[in-house]
Image 1: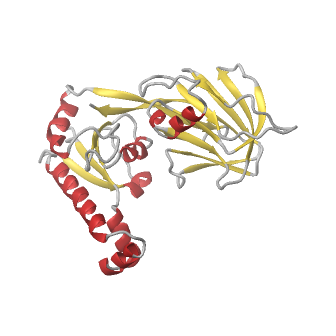
Image 2 (image 1 turned 30 degrees about the horizontal axis):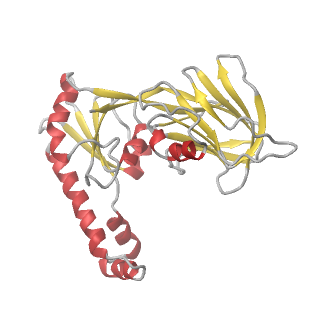
Image 3 (image 1 turned 90 degrees about the horizontal axis):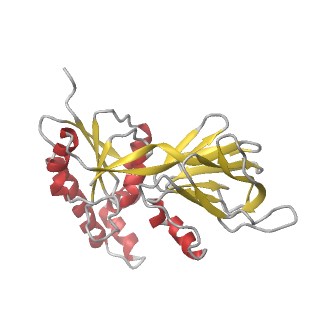
Length: 302
C-alpha cells in the first residue's frame, strides 16, 4: 500500500516571537521597542496575522494526508520525501530558502500578508490550500519550473540557490581570486586575477532583487533572464584595478552548459545562496569552484 501524500508546512518565527525569546516578557519587549520609537502592538498584530494565515492554511490539508511543520531554522535538518507537497507560508524569501533543500517536490507559496511584499513566489492566499493540494496530486497542477544556480567545488561540495550565489570574503575584506569565464565543457575561457567585494551569479528569479540593483548600476547592458530561462547572469562587485589585478571581466551571462570558474587566492572565502550565510561552502587557497545552471529546478504551483 502506498503512503498517503504529506503536506509540509514551512514557516518562520515571527518578529514578536523573536522579541519574546530575547527579552523574556511582552512588557520588556514593549519597553525595548518603545525606546526605539516602535510599538509592540504593531508587531503583535503582524504576529497574529501570520498565525491566522498558518492555521487557515493547515485547515486546508485533507484529513487523510500526513502532515509536518518546519520552521526556517530547521530546514537544513529536515528530510523531505518524494511524496511531499511543500506549502511555504511567508514572504518570497522563504520560498528561496526552502528551494535548495528540495529535489523536485511541488511547492505552494502562500502569502500571509498580501500587498506587503512583491508576491513573486507566494502567489496564493491561505484559503486556496485545499484546491492547490488536490491539483498537486491529481496531475492537473500547472507548475512553473524555475531555474536554479549551483556552485560545485573541486572536492565535490555542492550548493544550490534559487536567486543567487554570492562568493567572496566572509567579512568586509577584499576577496582575491582568479576568474575564468565562460567555461563550456573542457574548454577554458579567458582568465583574470581580481581583487573585489565578491562575485554574484544568479537566475531570472534573482533578477528581481540583489542582481537587479547591480544591473541598474551597470546601465542594464546585460539582458536579464526570465525565471524559467536556462540562462544565468553574473557580476563582479567593486573590482579593484592594480598592477596585479584586472577589471575587464566584471559581468556577463552564462548559457546552458557554461560555467564560471573561480580559483581562490585568499586564505578563506565563502559561497552561500540566497542570503543564508549560516549554510555556506568554505573555500581555501588554491581551491577551485565552478558556478552554473543547476540540474534541479523549483516546481512552483501557479
